[in-house]
Image (spheres, rainbow, N blue to C red):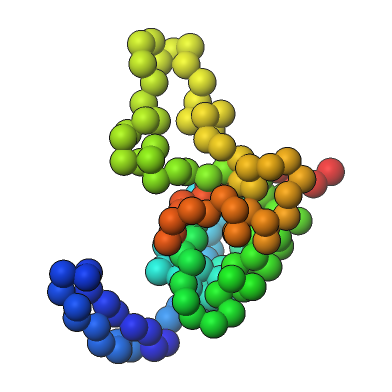
Length: 160
């Protein structure tokens, strides 16, 4: 696999890199993993759709209980369409999405005040994605993602 490694604006350093790519399904089958996967985290700088394409058997099995994705609004051609199609497909498989706003991460706003025993869990406090009920993933891509990237958490609720 070939990619592009870049530094932060203060460094203005960028160069091409090559690395070996591995299929998630192949890794899981080699490990002979049994039982549920509590969370699959994918944060690969705009290549989430590529990574999840290698996990189709795992996702279809229903054993992935949750996903964490960092969605990047890359200028790479086709990224928006690929990402929207990926999110729609995951939604059809039974994943319900919530957005983790950057403001929540920056302020550590996820920690409850007072007694933690009776406080709502973090899932209940996160805004849905898409925020508007019944909105398409295309709309959510355009309206709900206000920054270069955002984190999404998805819980698996198998369709009945």
